[in-house]
Image (tube, rainbow, N blue to C red; front, side, top):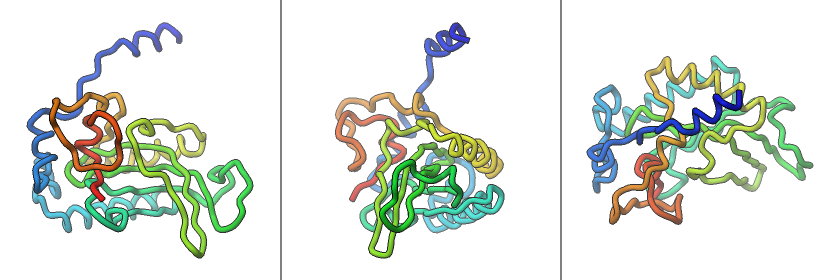
Length: 204
């Protein structure tokens, strides 16, 4: 087992995006990087409608609830949809006393508006009558799934998303630095821009 783990760590993982795809993603008016519908249309409304159908299907088939950020976190532009799935069961409860409202751990799925790619993260959200809080996504959170219920849910969700033509991207594919001088309009990172930033950025 240990030997297998060691050999895997030495495998060279190719970056997810080509230089041309990075250029398309970072145009002043971003261009989708897929020949598949709906992305090939570059029609944001068609893409969002598609994702609404996908998310509804995921909820129905995995028996989950969701809190989905369709509106660019309320301002600016996000190149992705932040979809968070959970179940109102004890195995999704946070492991600390709750003062008021609701708080759960769940599966965050970032759905790229500009491609069929998605990534997984685990995160907590809380909400109550006067508001709530959530963590913004970042590169280091990708693939860090620790709660058994979230891990099990991720397997179900991945299966359903792949049936819809979506493709999971992994952290190790997105860590490559972008060429020197490349700027990404994002508030989600405070260090060198990576392929993660090219694909998943939010300009507030």
